Amino acid sequence: MTGTFLCVFRRDIALALRRKSEALNTLVFFVIVTSLFPLGIGAEPNLLREIAPGILWVAALLAALLSLARLFEPDYADGTLEQMALVGDPFPLIVLAKIGAHWVMTGLPLTLLAPLIALQFALPGDSILLLFLTLLIGTPVLSLLGAIAAALTLGLRGGGVLSALLVLPLYIPLLIFGAGATGAAAAGLGAQSHLLLLGAFLLTSAALAPWATASALRIALD
Amino acid sequence: MLEADNLECVRGERRLFSGLSFGIGPGELVHLSGENGSGKTSLLRILCGLHTPSAGTVRWRGRSITATDDEYHRELVFIGHLNGIKDELTPLENLAIADTLAGAAPDEGQLLGALGSCGVAACADLPARHLSQGQRRRVALARLALSEATPLWILDEPFNALDTAAVAQVQALLVKHVLTGGMVILTSHLELAIDGARVRQIDLDQQRRPA
Image 1: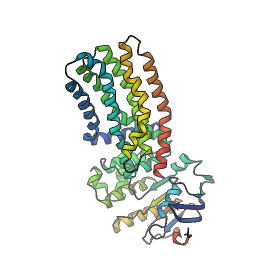
Image 2: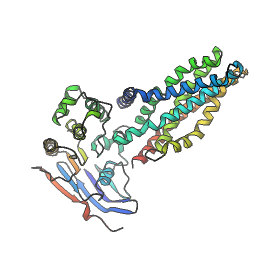
Image 3: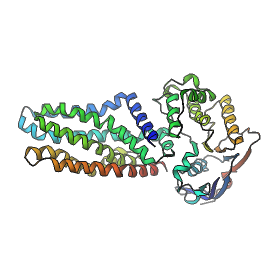
């Protein structure tokens, strides 16, 4: 079972590395969006500091949406997805490996880059650290929940828009708690409750999303 | 070993076949035929468990395949009309991944041997996007050379895009598999030249009922 998981995980990373432009797409999108705000708003440190977490989170969310369409579509088109559905190991495990690789290639680079971008918004050090933490816990959830929507709309024309509509309601609580953590800490309330809630989102979606996604993929293959 | 019991398949408004029952045991080859759109691919996908029949069951070793999902899939090789080849990866990598997912731990020599048996060892290190349709098909079929221990092979038009030499090579693989107690179910428009094996023809055109 671990062999299957690692095989699919490595395969997806290798594929992403051979399509570098595609892998860089989401990261470039994230950097452009977040860098345009300080330029557009101008040198108002207080305002920037206040909106920074929200902007970084919204940009991360949109970057995830942008990358979702490519999560299962290429494998579906060339028949490798149906081969994976016929492997003698649980299909949700394979799906989890694919989601994990997706996060490593999209969510993780974006999270690692976020502290650097946060400097443009004049965020203080502890806020940057907190923002980094929320993204580190939150971006895997973006991949996990997004995978369900991507699987449900697989093979549909115009599936991208539908997938966004499906997943946005699920993303919104994440956005509120993720972006709210820094504000709460700055107001002296402490961010612990926000972080705990994000952690709960992560655990719940990690436990349930692979199964939901696998069932949706089986329907798409039927 | 594999039994199809009273299968029915409805696509949209059309009933492709109904009341279809047959079985296959060790050392047998089933050759499905029928005109385009007669439901050959649908039937193969039902037998793999990818598609749910509108009625009827498929049993493997006496148990319904929906109950034995993972165990059944370990004893099955399915090659559909899509090759399942990643364009960005080389044939060698494609084959290694397919074989690892099938539960084996192949070394490079075995993989090259399998590619060689289908005549594509020379392009083993070329990204698959540079290969022709026929070469991709050969890479997909090279899995068969590594899957001799897997009892059931289900092949959807395996000879598509292949030249005569490759058709002969693949048929040799099929004969060897059947003669060593394996089972093959395939669709093909070609006449099969398979000696010494029990070949059963199932014509789906005779199974169709007006909807």
